[in-house]
Amino acid sequence: MTSVTIIIPVKDEEEGLGYLLDEYSSSHFNNDKSFEFIFVIDGRTSDNSREIAEQFSQRIIDQRETHGKGSAIRQAVFEWGKNTSEKVVFLDADGSYSFASVLDVISELDAGADVVSGSRFLKESGRPNGMSRLHYFGNRLLSMISGIRNGKHVSDLCTGLWGFNSSALNGISIQSKGFDLEAELFGWSRKLDLKHEEIPVEWSQRRGGTSKLRSLRDGLIILLRIIRT
View (cartoon, one colour):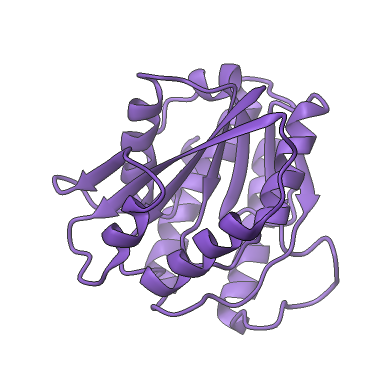
Protein backbone atom coordinates (compact mmCIF):
# COMPACT_ATOMS: atom_id res chain seq x y z
CA MET A 1 0.00 0.00 0.00
CA THR A 2 1.39 3.40 -1.03
CA SER A 3 1.60 5.93 1.80
CA VAL A 4 0.69 9.55 0.99
CA THR A 5 1.03 12.60 3.23
CA ILE A 6 -1.06 15.66 2.39
CA ILE A 7 0.37 18.89 3.79
CA ILE A 8 -2.06 21.81 4.19
CA PRO A 9 -1.08 25.28 5.48
CA VAL A 10 -4.06 27.08 7.07
CA LYS A 11 -4.95 30.63 8.09
CA ASP A 12 -8.63 31.52 8.60
CA GLU A 13 -9.94 28.91 6.16
CA GLU A 14 -12.70 27.16 8.13
CA GLU A 15 -15.17 27.18 5.23
CA GLY A 16 -12.72 26.03 2.59
CA LEU A 17 -11.15 23.49 4.92
CA GLY A 18 -14.55 22.11 5.92
CA TYR A 19 -15.51 21.72 2.26
CA LEU A 20 -12.20 20.12 1.41
CA LEU A 21 -12.36 17.55 4.18
CA ASP A 22 -16.04 16.78 3.56
CA GLU A 23 -15.12 16.04 -0.04
CA TYR A 24 -12.29 13.80 1.13
CA SER A 25 -14.62 11.89 3.47
CA SER A 26 -17.13 11.26 0.66
CA SER A 27 -14.54 10.29 -1.95
CA HIS A 28 -13.96 6.72 -3.04
CA PHE A 29 -10.28 5.89 -3.04
CA ASN A 30 -8.59 2.71 -4.19
CA ASN A 31 -7.39 0.52 -1.35
CA ASP A 32 -3.79 0.78 -2.57
CA LYS A 33 -3.30 4.23 -0.99
CA SER A 34 -2.97 5.21 2.66
CA PHE A 35 -3.52 8.92 3.40
CA GLU A 36 -2.35 11.05 6.31
CA PHE A 37 -2.65 14.81 6.85
CA ILE A 38 -0.27 17.35 8.33
CA PHE A 39 -1.87 20.74 9.03
CA VAL A 40 0.06 23.91 9.81
CA ILE A 41 -2.22 26.40 11.58
CA ASP A 42 -1.05 30.02 11.51
CA GLY A 43 -1.05 31.41 15.05
CA ARG A 44 -3.06 34.43 13.88
CA THR A 45 -5.99 32.21 12.84
CA SER A 46 -9.18 33.49 14.48
CA ASP A 47 -11.81 31.00 13.23
CA ASN A 48 -12.47 27.28 13.79
CA SER A 49 -9.90 25.98 11.31
CA ARG A 50 -7.94 24.13 13.98
CA GLU A 51 -11.01 22.37 15.34
CA ILE A 52 -11.93 21.18 11.85
CA ALA A 53 -8.37 19.95 11.21
CA GLU A 54 -8.35 18.02 14.49
CA GLN A 55 -11.19 15.87 13.18
CA PHE A 56 -8.85 14.43 10.55
CA SER A 57 -5.34 14.45 11.99
CA GLN A 58 -3.27 14.54 15.14
CA ARG A 59 -0.28 15.87 13.23
CA ILE A 60 -1.03 19.57 13.64
CA ILE A 61 1.64 22.26 13.83
CA ASP A 62 0.86 25.57 15.53
CA GLN A 63 2.77 28.14 13.50
CA ARG A 64 3.66 30.83 16.04
CA GLU A 65 7.29 31.88 15.56
CA THR A 66 6.99 32.34 11.79
CA HIS A 67 4.32 33.36 9.30
CA GLY A 68 3.75 32.75 5.61
CA LYS A 69 3.09 29.81 3.31
CA GLY A 70 6.73 28.94 2.62
CA SER A 71 7.58 28.91 6.31
CA ALA A 72 4.52 26.73 7.03
CA ILE A 73 5.48 24.19 4.37
CA ARG A 74 9.08 24.11 5.62
CA GLN A 75 7.88 23.29 9.15
CA ALA A 76 5.53 20.61 7.81
CA VAL A 77 8.29 18.98 5.75
CA PHE A 78 10.45 18.83 8.89
CA GLU A 79 7.58 17.11 10.72
CA TRP A 80 7.05 14.76 7.77
CA GLY A 81 10.73 13.79 7.98
CA LYS A 82 10.13 12.23 11.41
CA ASN A 83 7.82 9.64 9.83
CA THR A 84 8.09 9.77 6.08
CA SER A 85 5.68 8.54 3.43
CA GLU A 86 6.35 7.47 -0.14
CA LYS A 87 4.58 10.49 -1.63
CA VAL A 88 3.76 14.00 -0.45
CA VAL A 89 1.16 16.48 -1.69
CA PHE A 90 1.11 20.21 -0.92
CA LEU A 91 -2.50 21.45 -1.05
CA ASP A 92 -4.13 24.86 -0.47
CA ALA A 93 -6.77 24.96 2.27
CA ASP A 94 -9.32 27.16 0.52
CA GLY A 95 -11.26 24.35 -1.19
CA SER A 96 -10.35 25.48 -4.71
CA TYR A 97 -8.73 22.17 -5.70
CA SER A 98 -10.62 18.87 -5.72
CA PHE A 99 -9.47 15.55 -4.31
CA ALA A 100 -9.97 14.10 -7.78
CA SER A 101 -7.11 16.37 -8.84
CA VAL A 102 -5.04 15.21 -5.87
CA LEU A 103 -5.48 11.64 -7.12
CA ASP A 104 -4.46 12.73 -10.63
CA VAL A 105 -1.25 14.18 -9.21
CA ILE A 106 -0.52 10.95 -7.33
CA SER A 107 -1.18 8.90 -10.47
CA GLU A 108 1.38 10.96 -12.38
CA LEU A 109 3.90 10.32 -9.60
CA ASP A 110 3.10 6.61 -9.85
CA ALA A 111 3.82 6.84 -13.58
CA GLY A 112 7.39 7.97 -12.93
CA ALA A 113 7.45 11.72 -12.34
CA ASP A 114 9.56 13.09 -9.48
CA VAL A 115 7.53 16.28 -9.13
CA VAL A 116 4.02 17.07 -10.37
CA SER A 117 2.20 20.40 -10.37
CA GLY A 118 -1.44 20.95 -11.22
CA SER A 119 -2.19 23.60 -13.82
CA ARG A 120 -5.40 25.60 -13.86
CA PHE A 121 -4.80 26.64 -17.46
CA LEU A 122 -4.26 23.41 -19.40
CA LYS A 123 -7.90 22.26 -19.48
CA GLU A 124 -9.22 25.42 -21.07
CA SER A 125 -7.79 28.57 -22.53
CA GLY A 126 -8.35 31.95 -20.94
CA ARG A 127 -8.95 33.11 -17.39
CA PRO A 128 -10.69 30.59 -15.10
CA ASN A 129 -14.02 31.65 -13.67
CA GLY A 130 -13.48 33.33 -10.30
CA MET A 131 -9.85 34.35 -10.89
CA SER A 132 -9.19 38.09 -10.98
CA ARG A 133 -7.61 39.61 -14.06
CA LEU A 134 -4.67 40.86 -12.01
CA HIS A 135 -3.91 37.43 -10.59
CA TYR A 136 -4.38 35.81 -14.00
CA PHE A 137 -2.07 38.10 -15.94
CA GLY A 138 0.45 38.29 -13.09
CA ASN A 139 0.66 34.52 -12.89
CA ARG A 140 1.02 34.10 -16.64
CA LEU A 141 3.81 36.72 -16.74
CA LEU A 142 5.68 35.11 -13.84
CA SER A 143 5.20 31.68 -15.42
CA MET A 144 6.74 32.92 -18.65
CA ILE A 145 9.74 34.44 -16.84
CA SER A 146 10.22 31.27 -14.79
CA GLY A 147 10.06 29.17 -17.94
CA ILE A 148 12.85 31.23 -19.49
CA ARG A 149 14.94 31.12 -16.31
CA ASN A 150 14.59 27.36 -15.89
CA GLY A 151 14.64 26.36 -19.55
CA LYS A 152 11.30 24.57 -19.31
CA HIS A 153 7.79 25.77 -20.10
CA VAL A 154 5.37 26.05 -17.19
CA SER A 155 1.79 27.27 -17.65
CA ASP A 156 0.87 27.80 -13.97
CA LEU A 157 3.80 28.69 -11.72
CA CYS A 158 1.60 29.80 -8.79
CA THR A 159 -0.53 26.68 -8.52
CA GLY A 160 -1.52 25.54 -5.03
CA LEU A 161 -1.28 21.81 -5.80
CA TRP A 162 2.09 20.02 -5.93
CA GLY A 163 3.12 16.39 -5.52
CA PHE A 164 6.50 14.78 -4.80
CA ASN A 165 8.07 11.39 -4.51
CA SER A 166 9.88 11.21 -1.18
CA SER A 167 13.34 11.02 -2.75
CA ALA A 168 12.71 14.24 -4.67
CA LEU A 169 11.35 16.14 -1.66
CA ASN A 170 14.28 15.02 0.49
CA GLY A 171 16.64 16.79 -1.89
CA ILE A 172 14.82 20.14 -1.72
CA SER A 173 15.86 22.68 0.92
CA ILE A 174 13.06 25.23 1.08
CA GLN A 175 14.19 28.78 1.84
CA SER A 176 11.13 30.83 0.87
CA LYS A 177 8.88 32.26 3.54
CA GLY A 178 5.77 33.25 1.61
CA PHE A 179 4.12 32.87 -1.79
CA ASP A 180 7.49 32.60 -3.51
CA LEU A 181 7.42 28.92 -2.48
CA GLU A 182 6.18 27.67 -5.86
CA ALA A 183 8.84 29.58 -7.79
CA GLU A 184 11.45 27.98 -5.56
CA LEU A 185 10.03 24.50 -6.09
CA PHE A 186 10.21 24.90 -9.86
CA GLY A 187 13.78 26.19 -9.56
CA TRP A 188 14.80 23.22 -7.42
CA SER A 189 13.36 20.88 -10.04
CA ARG A 190 15.84 22.34 -12.52
CA LYS A 191 18.79 22.38 -10.13
CA LEU A 192 18.30 18.75 -9.10
CA ASP A 193 17.40 17.62 -12.64
CA LEU A 194 14.10 16.23 -11.41
CA LYS A 195 11.43 14.97 -13.77
CA HIS A 196 8.71 17.61 -13.38
CA GLU A 197 5.35 17.05 -15.04
CA GLU A 198 2.51 19.57 -15.23
CA ILE A 199 -1.03 18.19 -15.51
CA PRO A 200 -4.46 19.81 -15.93
CA VAL A 201 -6.54 19.97 -12.74
CA GLU A 202 -9.96 21.16 -11.67
CA TRP A 203 -10.08 24.54 -9.94
CA SER A 204 -12.86 26.73 -8.58
CA GLN A 205 -13.09 30.02 -6.75
CA ARG A 206 -12.05 29.86 -3.08
CA ARG A 207 -14.77 28.94 -0.60
CA GLY A 208 -15.01 31.55 2.13
CA GLY A 209 -12.19 33.54 3.67
CA THR A 210 -10.08 36.05 1.81
CA SER A 211 -6.97 35.66 -0.30
CA LYS A 212 -3.71 36.27 1.58
CA LEU A 213 -1.89 37.19 -1.63
CA ARG A 214 -0.82 40.84 -1.89
CA SER A 215 -0.61 41.07 -5.66
CA LEU A 216 2.10 43.65 -6.33
CA ARG A 217 4.32 43.07 -3.30
CA ASP A 218 4.14 39.29 -3.49
CA GLY A 219 4.58 39.41 -7.27
CA LEU A 220 7.90 41.21 -6.80
CA ILE A 221 9.00 38.69 -4.15
CA ILE A 222 8.12 35.82 -6.50
CA LEU A 223 10.09 37.48 -9.32
CA LEU A 224 13.15 37.81 -7.09
CA ARG A 225 12.85 34.16 -6.08
CA ILE A 226 12.74 33.12 -9.75
CA ILE A 227 15.96 35.02 -10.36
CA ARG A 228 17.74 33.76 -7.23
CA THR A 229 16.86 30.06 -7.43
